[in-house]
Length: 127
Image (tube, rainbow, N blue to C red; front, side):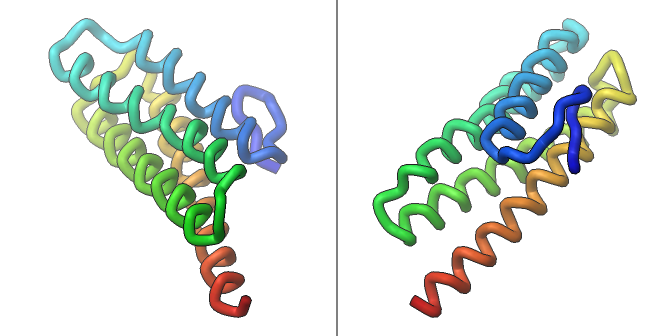
């Protein structure tokens, strides 16, 4: 079972919210640099979006609508992942350990969404 900051992760919505909150705290700790401000703002938007869009996906009006919203979540997570990797390589952080933890967590969320989208796509084809 996945954990983030000691919390168990068996609910995807809670997992996404926890990830977004951890990103917020990470961004607040960034050094006062132009690159940190730019990438931090972008990361704030892309990393909070999946939890909001997943909430919408849970109330989707059709299978196509559900798939679309899940794919939006996946796109935003991939953007967050690449943003974190850029920040890591450019050493735009105060804690290398924290940025590595966030990259790992983001990658795990990407894997969950890829599997969910694949399952939903197969289910859509058989119905």
